[in-house]
Image 1: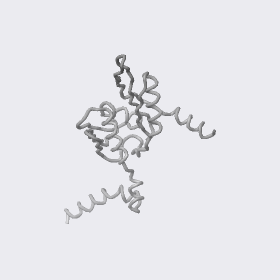
Image 2: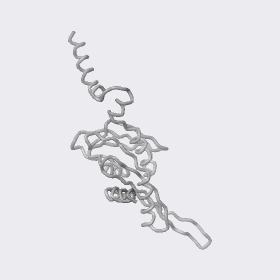
Image 3: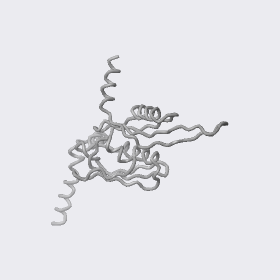
Image 4: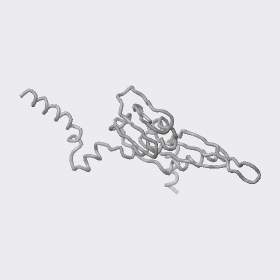
Length: 185
């Protein structure tokens, strides 16, 4: 019972955004029977985000189902300074191809459609994105999540390579100094 109350507290911090609603029709003997499909993005604005789909005969029920599905399928994304991504990344799903790029402070969220909802609920403040190919929100979302799942933090890279984080981050500075010394000599 204690675990359930912790989940309730965790759910209250989540922010959800409705990405889209489609009306779908099933043709039956007496005519058409309409239903609704909802696409929702849920996040805690601190590095966790998920998306979900829900179908029902009524819009509120479809949104509720989609939100529950999104809460079950959340992923954690490492953020740099809690405001942007660690590195540029691309994601592909079907005809959807998205490019996510880090941005300096003050840039804001430059993203369109479903990707904007993902970054707002994720808690990213500065990012530049481009959607290439499809404008289908389902495929754009899936391509964005493929890209976010491949995101790596310097800590995880250092652990995988058996090095210190300072060695991973300090390498560019050391190489630049080494190249400058080589040019002068």
